[in-house]
Length: 318
Image (tube, rainbow, N blue to C red; front, side, top):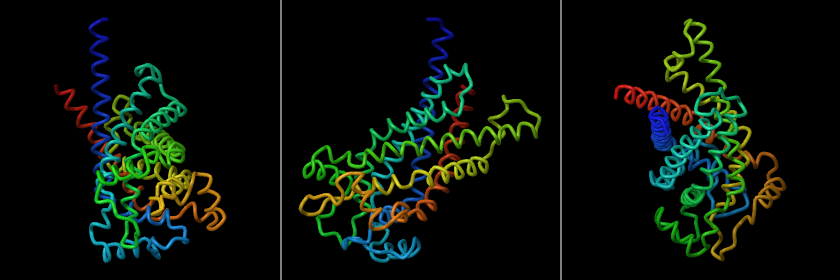
């Protein structure tokens, strides 16, 4: 193998790990800033109005104030450890798998990617990440749903939740919600496709304005542009895929003291929600979800793009 080819592969591998690093840092920043809204969203999602061990909130603001008053800061940050672990791991793996898929489809940058290639890359990355992280998200959901009204012994933390679930329910229970989780792969696919296509539009527009060629495109966008791109692409993805989030959250609830799950499978959730709540049931918690994820997505892409630019400049300097 030629020296130039070895050097190219080495740089390619380094760039993939830089993408993973940037994604992981972005994921941590996102969770730290927005976690209380995630707790509120999860509690809204699973409250079908027919259970007594879940508190009822009037709206997002009332939920935050009530949790803060009754449960304190610990309640607002319930499930924070698995959320940090899951988000950091998910974003790191997502950007890593996504960049590798794009590289493969573009034949190491020799061909221009189409919207279909971006969609396939995002879907591929999302599926792999879902399989790797579902147990973490299940633990996060259960910790977030622990309230003073709970009748079963509460989990004391991430490790206790994980070991208790394995002991009481078996390893298969760690993959409850995997089916809607895999359908949620379309969320990332829609978001990244929208992001990439909107990014091209803005870059082309600014390039024409400044009369620069594509080689200077990396310097055309700033943090405000990344925030707008991240937020806009997130709204599109949320509106189209939110029902799958509700289905997954309801499946991942802790079983009753008798070990019987509230919902047996995804179709059971769909039937019950449609029967007792109508279409509105599939969009419960969407307000805190939008409040959390739209700015969160903006933060993620601001951090990600700036970390990538920093690592890229550092690599060039060396």
